[in-house]
Image 1: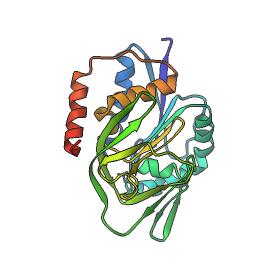
Image 2: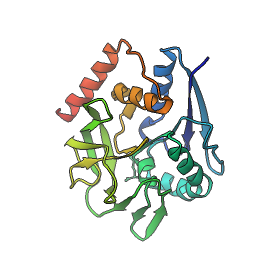
Image 3: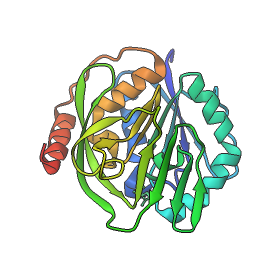
Image 4: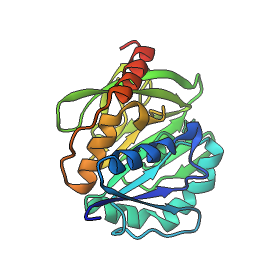
Length: 240
Ligand code: GLN
């Protein structure tokens, strides 16, 4: 096989709320349906990652206690490699709890969980309602503005530093903090978002775009009637 997408899933057993590993299944299917190779590696607690061995790093969502279990380990065993990989153009996709850990810190009351500081953002668990519900955002990943639809459920409110760019503009839902109208973050090929669904089964165009960015290729289109229906139903659920 000449081209293969080499994916590394970070803490798949701990960071997998809402079956976020479905995102990996979609990446695999989108590659295999086109005759591209797909290789999956896993890196858990106490395991280092080789920054040059993967095209795409993935971390899913988790409850606060799951994040507590991985936060320090991620700093100790993966931070430097992930920074190196991101500098080299690898894609990093982080969902919800994983997204929060991309930043500087996640403060929950008296406790402060460290993040890997790959992007300049901070998350604080404020008093008040969790931000829950169907959500839709408009994002432009270089091929025009498109909708990403999903479901969010987070107690943390994320605030981007002044130099950071959000992934998209909230059309419906709460987004990063329920106040500023933005959702997620994008810095180069590093993506963070609060949207579950899981994210990629509901937005296969996004899966394809991430594969393109990770491999530096242009993908041929597939017959996506079923996938488009799933996307439309997620949009409808959000009222968009
Ligand atoms: N535990 C985090 C929060 O509640 C992230 C939740 C999630 O991944 N859905 O803010």
